[in-house]
Length: 114
Length: 113
Image 1 (cartoon, rainbow over the protein chains, first blue to last red):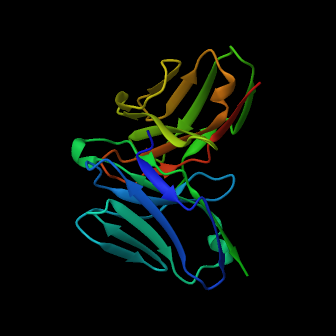
Image 2: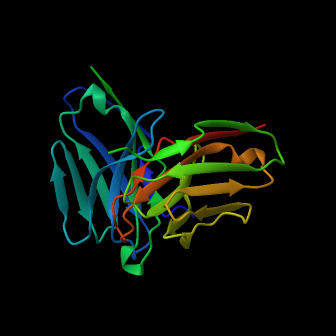
């Protein structure tokens, strides 16, 4: 049972464009939603994270939008650059239940073309 | 500050063998989590250790086990290897608080022939 659904699987964006990746979750106990970036040959690295008490969080060119009622959250990458080309994973955790486990989406491979 | 290190980086084994992977967390981190990454299933949680105690376990068979030492270093063991165990095994460390940032190592690429 996939508890976090991520789309699209792959995304091609022109340099300077906006990249948008969406995730939906089923478990209402999830209360921590991080996004990870993974380059080939490397482990995932935390980009930005949000909790359900806010609807949006911005860090530089990266913004998370969160819709609690729809159980959806998304990552927006503004002014996308070729260096942003990587695989992005959304994740969720139920910290209120004392869980240390991250449940990941299947990933989105982003290619930013010059 | 040194990041999470995993050894070995690459490993080739045959079916039926067992394997041990090692993870050294970031200095000061007391929690170590293990994940399996495959193209088909993505990233899946194996287990998490804090101060030598397993706190969380994912939905994997008993062939997958782990342990943590007093210096926070961790090992995971897979016995009776199957072809489907071929994957990238990632270790992540954190200070151990719920919802704390997990820092991933580069992973160990295991190939089972």
